[in-house]
Length: 270
Length: 216
Image (cartoon, rainbow over all chains, first blue to last red; front, side, top):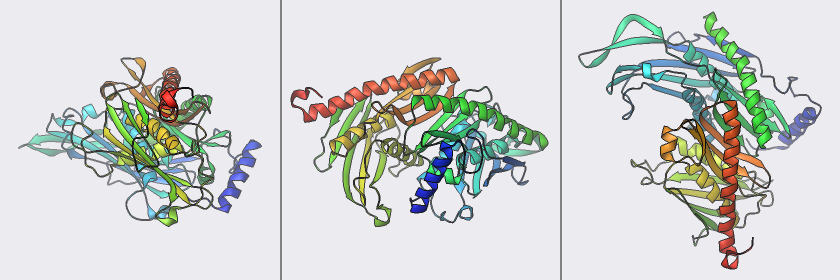
């Protein structure tokens, strides 16, 4: 978004507060906004979640259906995650093909979940080299207040965790649905992304939209249930020192554990 | 191998061969901005296009920019932005065109390193050059400069862009699984690699601008 005098004023106000150890919405530096996870919001999907992170809201629906495997991956199913920013989420969003920001968003969210091997694609084979199960997690952002990366990631993770997989068998060379044989979608771990913004020399977790506009740069770090770091993405127009990166790594493990609990609790409640 | 210059029309250019990667970079600007609404009154803007030729990879690639190329263009732009001083050129644009003629894994790092040299060759004022290198993990060992085979078979790939004089990391991505200790080691290894690449970048400029490539 283009800089204006208002943005400059806002940035200096945010920076001034940070110097005093305060954030514009009163949170501490390492505190995420309140995360509300509603499971099975879309009963027609095989799994779904509606997630509100502060005032950023995302809905994810998972559709599971038979598909052809990728040419060199006949013994693995398919997992694809997409993200879209809807025009109703913010006045500046227009319809049309996605810009670089939204493409990056979708790819970073997809990478975090894929690289964690959360969905065990080796268990999604109906007939080797011919027919596999495809899992499609489509996310839409419906309300914007910064940090779409984490909101979308939590929505997708929560939806995948709660997905039920139908069963197919090959009959006359076509995959045929077996009624009443649903099972949980096989998952191995729970990836959690934590996005941190650098504003001046300060690092804050889960930036809201004011902080997002004011930041110098950001980093998104995804961790898995065993506390490993599995995906990184730096963005924005400044850089981090090595010490800052290491600190962000530690923060993401600590904060990620809390978010993971919230996602687990939501899954249990369904 | 990095070479500064080489293109006649571009204001600055460079060519890098890094493993089997062959990448050409041309820089234009500061120049008028088209479309005009993109221009800014307080600063110049940087635009980066990373593009792979259809013949650069094993199977022919569709020449239209893919989502991957759009994302890489964005991360390279954001890796270069901390280095270039565009405030002196309001209402202008600096365009960086990166063409991958042949790809062999780690193209974004090679492209970023070459783009820095091309920007310097174009005479764009800079705070530092951005060096780049990928570190990663294969066979449970932290390694430097992951090539295509190692990337496909490896356990982690971490491209890093780094400004050695300012000690700032300006590009950082990862896919793969690393423990917190391996993560630290991987960052440190990558930065060591960046410092080696930095020397090659300086040498490329010295070779072009100093007789016999002496003192820099």
